[in-house]
Image 1: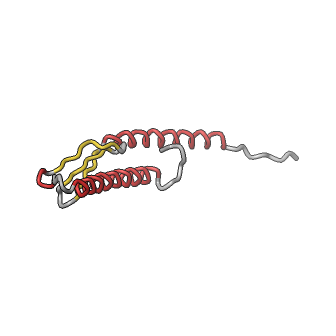
Image 2: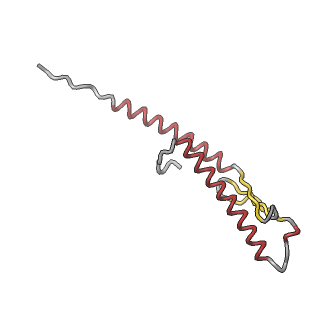
Image 3: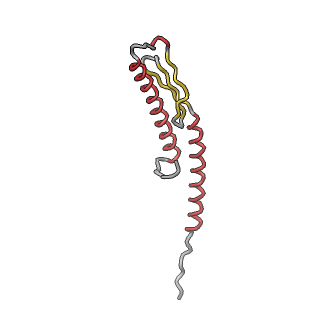
Length: 113
C-alpha cells in the first residue's frame, strides 16, 4: 500500500503573504508621503514664538511676535525658538509613529518605513 503525501499549499500561501506584504508596503509608502507633507505647529512663551514644521522634519516657518524681540536678551528669544521647533518636531515624529503603527498593526517590519 502506498502512503499518500499531503500536498502542501505553501507556495500559494507564500504568494498570498507576499501580495499582502506588498499592499501593506504600498499603503505605508502612501501614508509616509502624506505625513511628510503634513504640517505641525507648536508655540512657546505664551504664543510669543510659533514654529511650523513638515512631517519630513523640515522647518517651514517661524513666527516671532515683535514685542518679544529684545536686543538685550537674544538668548531668551533663542530658547523660545528652540523650544517651539523641538515641540513641533516631537509632534510630527509622534504622529508619524502612531500612524505607521496603526497601519502595520504594531508589527515591527524593518526596512518598510
